[in-house]
Image (cartoon, rainbow, N blue to C red; front, side, top):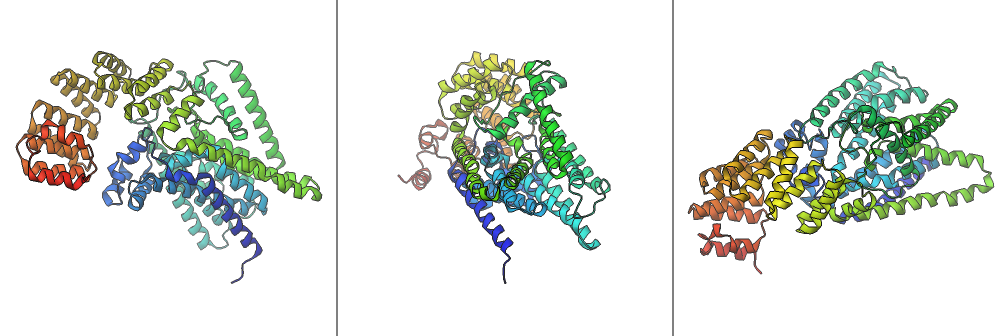
Length: 612
């Protein structure tokens, strides 16, 4: 079979996009999970993503993931686990693959609308390698954005086929496929609610090439979007959700504060320097000079977009798409994060199309004799952006490098200092953790996550009064903070006040009955009190929920050893070792295991799992 020259050129361009993706993002295959930023809860501590099963699938569609309804992200994590186990390189590979496919789909759509190879290649390359895209690719827990874009683009492709179909049968099959892909996009992330608006604008700006019943055929899209938006809002308002009060206390203050954020986004697209994982935009309570200047700049940009729309609706469409893509993250519904690189992933389609169109405009206005010079210079900015993205990927190696960079780039971010404190605490660097927590708390005395982390550090290091003071402050700010009540229980436990510890733990359990960490703490409390039957019951409750952690099995081994049940203790101890328990010293020092330590079966187990 012969291939047309166009097909060969497209295949060459696709190959180039894949090679560039591997070069820019490939080293992420050796990177770790972000263990202090959602990867822990989404993957490492989440047994519901450990393999494909009907139970796990049901859990994905009937529960929220850290306050977000993203069942397809959970399904993709199940598939990753089935393929790679808990190897982070496999999860990173999937992110890179989806992002690359998204760039190929954008090339495909551009080629449908514009018969110009330069526009398609420049636009798709810019989408692929712009430094603001690194966060979405590098952060495994933002898989939801990648998936939402993937299905969004497939739905858009289906809509194009629906408009262009020559027969009713093909037309309605294409329409059904469009609705299906759109639903899958929404089940990946609610950002896809913008599609009905995008399609209306698309019909207006690209009227040629097909028919569309402007609003009538958008009604099913709007209905599906409304359902998912309602489900998402419920998740936003759960204890783990992202919903917060308006920044600055009022919707007007939030609006004023977002105007400079929009301008920062525009600057990042043109000059992507000092990108960070966390930003701390200033809160503006009134129409001050900064807000007025930002409003003026945005007015000029919008005025330019309107003029572009007047001259060429197809170009004006991409300006509109950029702002429509930003609308869901404009704090209309206030969320914890006001600004993030990942919020530009959808708007980048518009930016990419404008950049490609700009190159075509430039080519048409320089003489043919200068085309060779133009083609020689054009790759330079793309190469520069690729190098910048490659350098940016280095900071995603692990939690320490990422958040050390964040506090350097954005020292006013209390969130960055709080997470860095958690990173140091997890690695046993308590002095550095304390410094980071205190720096963040000075920036925002009401940061509940820092209060939780620092109070836990104080409790852990025996500074119980300091820990108690911070916990009472935390719970006064947020009485429903589950880990705060759990921390208070642990503080009481360290003091030997078992009755108050039990009250605090039970209150935490009442607030979140499915929190297995709290049930574990209750099991620990009863084990310390010597109430072995109650302790065993709590631990078995955790086991029944499928939370198969090595610590649960180890503690059950301790309970059975203390109860004199040698065989049961050895059975649980072997399960703990099989699940990855590796504290060799504890096995020989823990007095709770003293009744089984001299048995032949214990020694055989030790030799089997610790042959050295």
